[in-house]
Length: 396
Image (tube, rainbow, N blue to C red; front, top):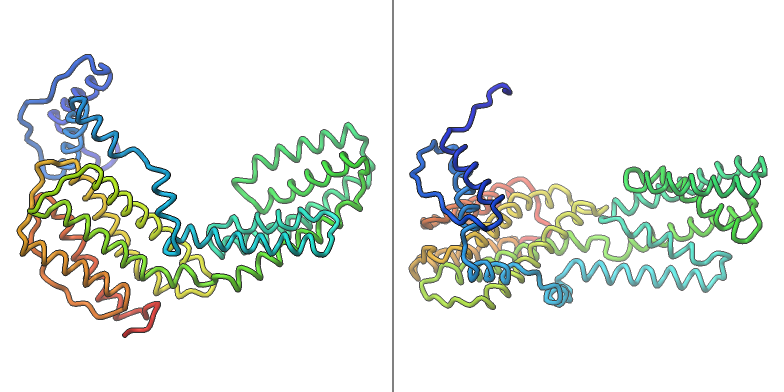
């Protein structure tokens, strides 16, 4: 047994064994745990999860169908919700399209020998998830191509026969597949050898002369990608981040009202649409934050100031999803609802405009105290961070 590790109480072991047997019975046995369970507070989350598994296994078909219908991904709706300039994915797609169009135009306009290598190199660099990663890929592709040409030059000095060249091609392809995911810089060396050998064998002209156009075309593609990244949307993510957090906060306020308002208006279709919108906005928020962190000229301290708030907003979304599956959830009065909605809006305005925010006392929310705690953490983070870091936009 590991140091400081303690065995589970017997009653929890029995519960786990009971649920495991239900799982392996494949629906033949339907029986719920009915015995009283006494345990220390530190095991509460574990016991709660065991009870959830027990409830899911014994759920009736109607409930299962409802859960499946609710959780089924709606890819068409996700695509439509991303067709807006507020979506970082959409903006990135537009930027990629513009840069690739420029690369293709230059490749065809100046009649390069292997014109397709130019946009291919540009595309490879744009695959980086952030600007910094794209620049790293640019350096790796340039250096790897030159080293690959040098290695191939040494190989071709011995004038290898066609069968040997084919074997070398296969070996280079194998190393490419092994290394491309682990170390792109080294993989580019073997990619270059592979491409040039294939090109030489196909043209029946296995000579180092085919390598020089490769170097020129790759460098041109790299220059196009780097220059365009420096001028097109160089600070797009960092400028979007405050408004993105404000959008998520307001959307969570809408879902909060739907879940806990005393004026109930249950609707499965409404649930799916609102949670889908929130899911899209949360994914967009994470993408914007990660991209802003990887921008060349962004204020990293100002961006990292947002992280605790992003984490808290994700935590609130997680609690919302749990609350949706609880049909007996607690509903709050209109006065308490107004206080919560005011706090959500104050936080959103702070993100959006950089205005001062005051910590307000948040009423208790029975069953879901994590929401109250998360909002308190966001308020505290907003106040503390303003003392140490300049915001990404000027204060009004």
